[in-house]
Image 1: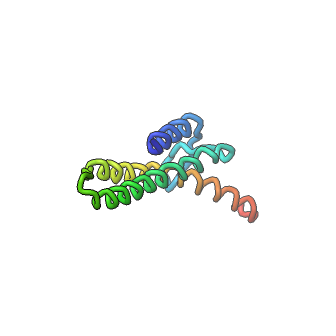
Image 2: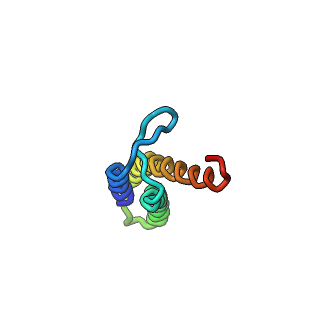
Image 3: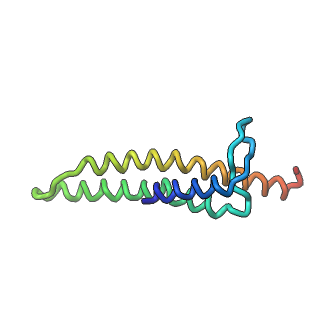
Length: 112
């Protein structure tokens, strides 16, 4: 769910973004006033899925003590895949946040 929400946040960010040059590549980046989109995507994407993966592992280990418990390794592998996808999507949010923070620090230190 959080990966889907992050994908939606990336799409919204792309709709309201303006082009910026990052390492010589022109990428659409959000304006500094829209930092909340990137921050919420950064928090939700990798962290919620990682917590869900840990919760699944704990539940699987606790359930292994019960002889009537049926292990579901496919669920864990799906969660691992979602963790990887979540971290890839979070790179977009981190890049947006880094650009905003760099602009704020540049202005605060009088370098701009």
